[in-house]
Each structure stands twice: as C-alpha cells, then as structure tokens.
Amino acid sequence: MSLLIEAKQQLNRILDLCIIVLMAALAVVLFVAVITRYMLNFPLAWSEEASRYAFVWLSFLGAELCLRVKMHAAVDILVKTLPPRVQYVVWKVGQSLVGIFLIALLISGINITRVAHDQLSPALGIPMSFVYSAVPVGAALMLLELLIQVRHDPTVLSSE
Image (cartoon, rainbow, N blue to C red; front, side, top):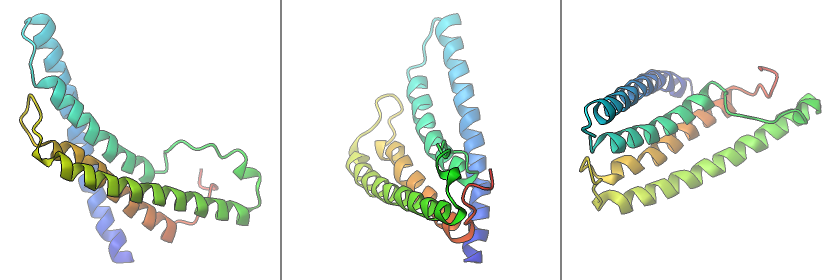
C-alpha cells in the first residue's frame, strides 16, 4: 500500500499543476473575452465554450483536491458529541456512502462519455467526450484518495 501512497503523491503533484494551469487558462481566456467583447467590440466565439469546459475540469479536479486536504463541507456538531469509537463508526459509514456515490458517478460518467464521443462542441470542434470525461476521471481520483484515507487515516474529526 505504501507504493500506492507514493504513486498518489506523484499524481497529486501533477493534479496540482493541472489545477494551476486550468485556473490560469480560465482567467486569461475570460480576461481576453471581456477585452475583445467590450473594448474591441469583437466577441470571440470560442471563449465562452473554452472557459466552460475548463471550469468543468477544474471543478472535478478541485473536488479531488478538497477531498485530499479534507476541505469538503461537513456538519459535524452532532458527531463531535459522540464517544470516539462511535465517531469512528460514523466516519466509516460516511466514507462508505461517499464511496458508493463515487462508484455510481464513475459508472455513469463512463456511460455518458461513451455516448458523447461522436458529438463535437460547436465552437471548438473538440469531441464532447473530452469534456464529459472529467466526470469519470474526477470520480476515479476521488475514489483512490478515499481508499487511501480510509486505509491510512482513521482520524475521525479530531484532526480539525
């Protein structure tokens, strides 16, 4: 399992870089779109589509980052009043439910990506499967992170 953790750490570096690049690209594209639309009166047809697709990928990669650094929203006021062993059980059940959801998201994402492969985006002309593949890729990355956390990070809520 330590090999998996080492591989995930390398993958995390790549994911962090992808998030940074997507954020920068999104900012640049939107800035250029605003300038060309309102100052030059020449709207770019592809800018809205490119920014939307970058945001989709950014959302799913960002969700994995939030899971990794334990920044997803949680209402744990009731759980914190429970004894530590019960907190641990509640945490395991919660992680299991998240895992089930992510498996369903992965399967659905794969199915929709297959269906969308023959469609091309209107302005950019790229296969829509590229855009939709953010769903299964994000779900798979989150499942991998969840597996590592459940196996190696049994700290329930005391780490906050």
